[in-house]
Image 1 (cartoon, rainbow, N blue to C red):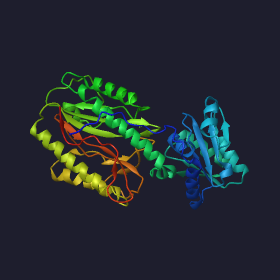
Image 2: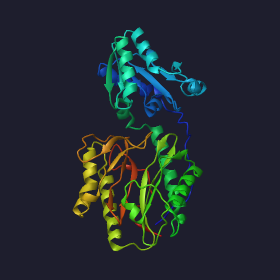
Image 3: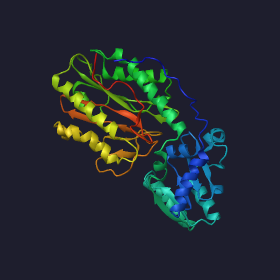
Image 4: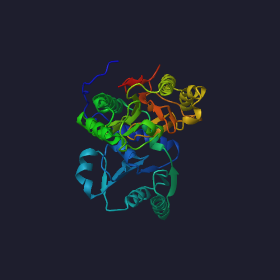
Length: 379
């Protein structure tokens, strides 16, 4: 099989052609259809998607009347907010950004204000509710208003995701030489993460999983000082983050010739993953993709050892809406990016997971963004 060691060409990490006003307008239309006057957005990935602000402390008020839109942050980010969000009015507060937002709506005669109920700690949500009540605004808990809009990526987002995945593929090839008997899992993970950054990643998407031998039976194993041994299957789940967007890929590799049962297990998972990718088409239910992955594994006798969903959305967060579960009814749409990742885990023996990040196409099969070989690689 051919493995490419070339470092990827990367697009402008600032994503200069993103129209954040258009994104807020899409949210505005949903709010108006739901008779909501404004949404107070506190989840930072949602704030970033709506405004372009990349700091660690912010909220944004998005109102049906765009003149009421407001970015709230603190004194650490005065300069950064002015550079990243020049078109929005900005409020700098020490605390209580919700108070500024609610007061602004009350003065404009709004009847209600929605907030991200699933993203706020109980006490913070209670403060928002109390502030709204003080100003005679109805507080409206809402879930996934922005997340469902974020699920469909625009061209700039897809470019960033392709770049993140290209870095991920290049890093996988670059670290194959470290996969040899006697190397500790933790050493492999450290080299892998440093390599992604050297290739242009802004950071790893998440703490990399390197799981060898019996440790590969733990779906989200944390690398340890266990040293790789001949005959091990080594499961590596990792990804690069670029321009805020996350890649996610898993490959399972053999150190020397594995036990025939493990070789067969890898082939069963590979076939199931290919079936899942083929099923990930526009207008397919997410449950159909999960079943396409799950049914072959169940037929092979490993259904009880496939213990997690078959995938999830990925973008500004490593886990986004939708989740690929058997009873899921959400429909995939062109431009969505999801993972397809069946796995089988045999306690005390080992495990196999194969995962790709894919972009749903308008017609036909998805674009597979992570391209490293899925066949069993024997080192």
